[in-house]
Image (cartoon, rainbow, N blue to C red; front, side, top):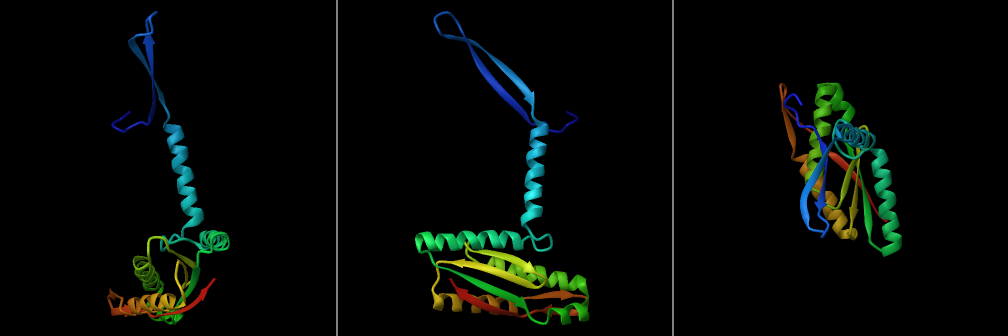
Length: 178
């Protein structure tokens, strides 16, 4: 319709003669665009419910759900997991000195730096304000320390170019093994 693709459901039914041989087929079409729109709306609502709108990371609800799942896996299968509590240092000073727009960009920069350096099976979320939580699986205490310190250094080495020069941030990380 009007140059737009309309989702359709196609059903093909064979026509058979008295001997059971296929002699033709009937195709029936049904517009299922309303169903496709409903599925898209459900997907959009899931994103709203589970993702932080500024950073695109998991939100607090999604973090809580994932942490619960990881703790269940730990109990059931004895798979180790850990939690990193990450806080941007002096974030109020950044907001006060440069404004909330730069503060939001710093949040996004830290989120990207952290997310880009996690393993695919680990999870990072924004817990609130300038706080992040990473759920790390399959690590021991030494590996966790090395991992957390590497994230800290990578954020410290990151910065944004703004109209007033380069702006960076540092983070503090607390960690625990479950």
